[in-house]
Length: 316
Image (cartoon, rainbow, N blue to C red):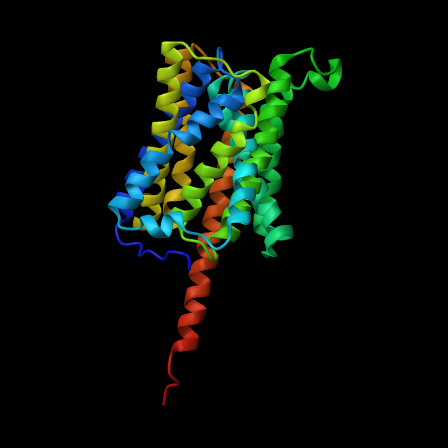
């Protein structure tokens, strides 16, 4: 059965979520720096494989190692791993072609796409408010990417940044699909099992790219790959812990702090400054995403009140 944890310390949950986003941002910077030497498939392998010891140590410390490593649905975990590995690989490719803040900003489209996918794949009901937010958010995505889409005019191969933009959009789609698959898996599988088997299947999937040009990294790039794996695993644990201490609707909005970290890292480490269109579009997407979270929270409150009224004994 899926783990159910009480939301007892929202401030701690928010702090853990912010820490996980910051660590993921450093991980992304390490991958971006390594892209000059290492192909995306190799970077995915080290990101997933070197995170495994961190995840296993965390499960052991919580006394849940058996729960994390056992599963009744290995096939579903394998599918999740393939989707995740593909999404990670495409995202890492985009990091090598675009400024870090732009890849992060385009990635904000994933929750919007997941809202749409949930209707068709999970049978969830999405009403006018959230459809409107999704539509506005996608307009924000178009605002972000439009200046880069010279590929529509000049054809593929003419502009690496345009190809990077398309790649980042594909990554957002795959991340959304992974989110849907995780929501489905979480109905029957413990969270730690989902995390553990993702890293196992992702590592195995990334190994399939070995014949396509893996290289022996330099000492500096070895360090970057180790950082990406260890930091990725640590960030995943912080993320898991954040949802143990606070409701999803409380901590989820802090995903958008990644834009702040991306801007700072991009400017000070890589000398990157995003275009005005990216900042404007990202603001629209973030606003739409926050509205969807607010709406889901309101619907949850209404559902709880309705259930409470049903449970009340008749008066008189």
